[in-house]
Each structure stands twice: as structure tokens, then as C-alpha cells.
Image (cartoon, rainbow, N blue to C red; front, side, top):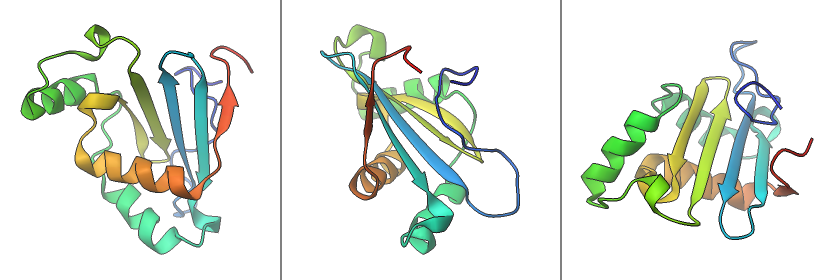
Length: 129
């Protein structure tokens, strides 16, 4: 795991390729961590997923971005007040963002859904290497 608690191998910078896209879902009743790791450059979906990933607003930890999205959606509840909800961490060579399930903006939700359809998840216990 890296300093952000993510277990991925994505790299920022590099040779101009898109690299890996890592989606981690934590939380829920079982407390399991699911990880989807997509090597965009090796994927048959590169031409669709790569530009989408590059154009998203990567702004580091998105707690303020999440709060704003939740307010726009009118949810009125913070991720911490929603018991057993999932939290997503999305990491690529372009950055890292985190969203509560209910606060995830549509463009990010679309990306997560696509990655979940393409890549096979790996199940982990939080804190396990």
C-alpha cells in the first residue's frame, strides 16, 4: 500500500501513455475492499477510456469536491452520516480522488461503472497486503 492507503501501482507522469486506472471500493456492511485495476494502455477499451480519464478533473483528495457534489444533488447528508455506504478511491497517473457513493458526480460514476464492467475485482480485507 502507498501512503494514501491505496494498494495500486499507478504512476504519475511517465511515457505519455494512460497507465493504470485503479478503482477501490471500501465500506459497506461486510467491510471488504474491492479493487479494480485496469491497464488502460493494454485494454481493448483504450481509445474510449483513456481520453475520458485524461479529461476528468483530477484534483487530489476530493473531499471538498465531494461535498459540493452532494450539495448540488440535494442529498443533505455527508458520507460519514450515511452508515454502511461505499467510499471510492480512484487513482491514475493524473491524480487521486475520493468520493462517497452518494456524492460521486456523474462523469466519475460513468467511469467507475465502465471499469467495473471491464476489469475483474480483487477482494481484500482492509489493511491486508
